[in-house]
Length: 231
Image (tube, rainbow, N blue to C red; front, top):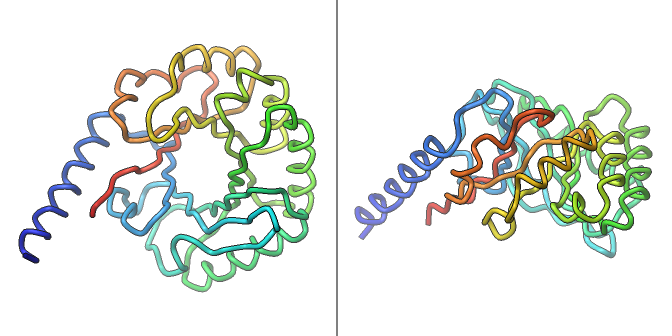
């Protein structure tokens, strides 16, 4: 039974690598979201990684989820990602970030910044951008990026523009449940025309095979969610 299980896992790994190769031309600007340990099987030491470190809930309680610190043996600085369901005090979030950063640094991993994954209501993007500015003031030289939604581009493109200028960039997630949103070219056109500083967030789903040319013009690169299961 173990023999067949190992064959199955190997087959899934090989399939995942084929998907990555077929869908995406490698770029040094690509970044990979690392949500679980198995995601590391599909990246190399030269890739740029953003490592999920847990959630902050509506009651501002923090729960660690994802990888625990260890020596990743990566050649490039790593960013940490926190999923927010509410906006805590910038000072409290900075305290948590520095604590996580120190733990990783003790294992020889260079941490270069924080990505905030928060689904802000479109109508509150300006307020969210002000909160990011406050967080940046506390974190000083640390790089801060944020995620954004396709609905932001449709509902409040001006707010998304301000958010992108408060952070290093906004990663616009072009998918829902791993599948590509419809009419993505229109979304990209809106981002470009309104000078939003953005990257595109995509998955390894075959939907994105038809969108290889999405990241052109103002796009700063791709962030890839490795939705490949090994078991």
